[in-house]
Image 1: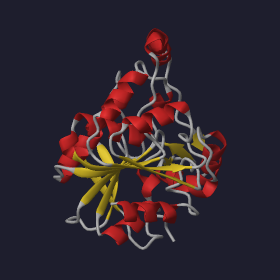
Image 2: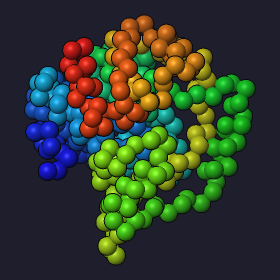
Image 3: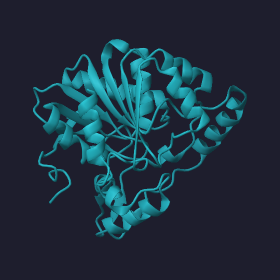
Image 4: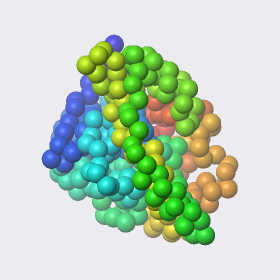
Length: 292
């Protein structure tokens, strides 16, 4: 059975923001809408196992977007950067395309960082934040700003690398498992890779992701700026972490959690992609159902 229908609720493909953004949608179009935001180098298929469970239990609609440069969405224009704050426009453009004034944001990893920016700057647009193994944003101390800018400028002046090609989807999945930034197995990786590949004329598959996403950011927020942004979030925040995820007891993670005014934290068995792991996703769904 296809991943998009395995939990009993089929996903529909959407085109948003004048065709710039692609998305997957679960649930009735007239149901209360949640917007789901994936992590770096992932795509809307990140929610293929969790969304059907939540839609069925809560009678909601979930629209998971592909951020610019990811999945089926358009790449940024030539000469553009993929700064973290640029993705906030993807969220707002999605909400406007859907006619949604205020939404719950269901967000993983980098998507959680973007959700925090939107909730901090535009509290009137965010009902709740449900964050999956992500909080705040990747940051750089102020004294390292020049070095970060240099890295970004040098990298952006280099020629773009060609999109990776593989004999088949299975080989692409194996490459993702072997080279992923955070550990994940082939079952967890498969929905992400399937959505992020396209067939070539010679029978191979090629990754859709914009290779510019691999280049370092020119500028990042400082730690103090991130904490200040988190402190301004007015919406209630439900943070679900994986025991083997990226937050845990790290000093920065604890500072970030303490900065959020209304935060409820749960730590579950699982890794960074616990919402996509077959053995963890139902527990994630149960926590969300009982907290919203």
